[in-house]
Figure 1 (tube, rainbow, N blue to C red):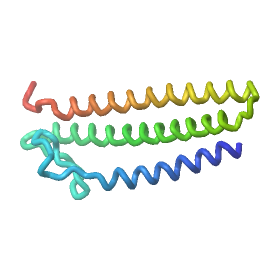
Figure 2: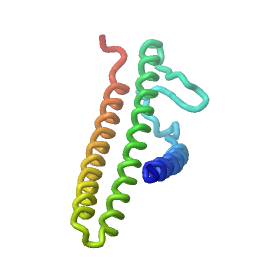
Figure 3: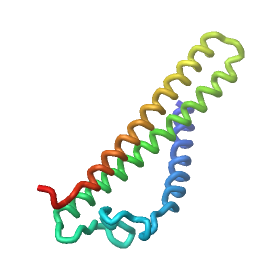
Figure 4: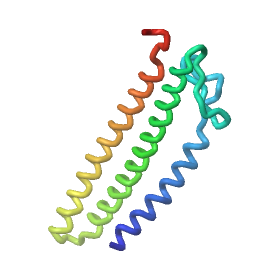
Length: 139
């Protein structure tokens, strides 16, 4: 139980560090594509000229996309922490076969989980990019 609390505490610390780092990265308005709705700290609603329904839909897509992205970043951080813990278990197994096998399984499943999370993140980002860049005039 103590390991679970330590892992959870480490995940919260890592999560707060990553949020601070990601908050400092912002896209300047000069580099923003023209078909991307404006969404910044001062405006919480996307604007697409002449299409308020499309703006509302794109705003919802962006918010859900950011939420899913942050959840996947958190899961990735947890997976890396589990990978580090499994590596430490492997290093401190001291030749005990059961501990070595348990650590190898942990490393294998952590890497497998990390691959799935990275693929999920890229799929979500791709789908959001496709949904946001759709033509609002097409009917």
